[in-house]
Length: 187
Image 1 (spheres, rainbow, N blue to C red):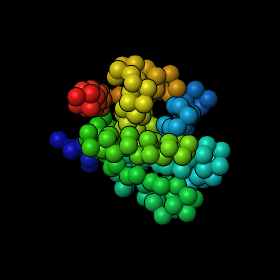
Image 2: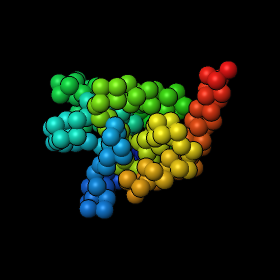
Image 3: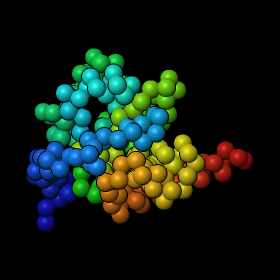
C-alpha cells in the first residue's frame, strides 16, 4: 500500500495540470473570501504582480509541501522581494488535514496581517482542501460562526472547495478549542 505522501508526490503534476485545464469562469484560480483573505490554487510567479498590486496581498499562507513549490511558485525570498511575508505550513495533499498547531498559526498570521488592512492569499495546490480548511477556521473565528456555517460561507465564495473527512474533523476540533478558549477567557 502506497503512503499518502508518496501518492501525493506521484499525483502532483497530473492533478496540477488538471486544475489548469479546468479553470473557467465558474472555477477561478483564486477567490476573495472576505476583505482580508483570498483562497486559491498554487500562485504562479506570473501572478505575483496582480496579487500584490490589485489584491493588496502582503501575506501568503502556503499549505503545500516543498516539492510542490519547486518550479512554479515564489520562494520565501522572492515573496519578500515583493513586500510579502510567507508562512509555510507544509501539509500532505489528498485529504490530509493541517494539525491544530498549523491551523492556530495560520489563523493568527491572518489576524496579524489584517491589523494593517492587508490581504492574505491562502493556498494549497488547488485551493480546495488543505487551504479551504484553514480559510474555514479563520472565518469561523473572525465571524464567530459554527463549523457548518463557516464552511457554507467559504463555499459561497469558492464553490468548488472540497473538505475531506479528516479536514472536517480538524475544523470541528478547532471549533471546540475556540469554545474552550472563550470559556476560559470568560472565567
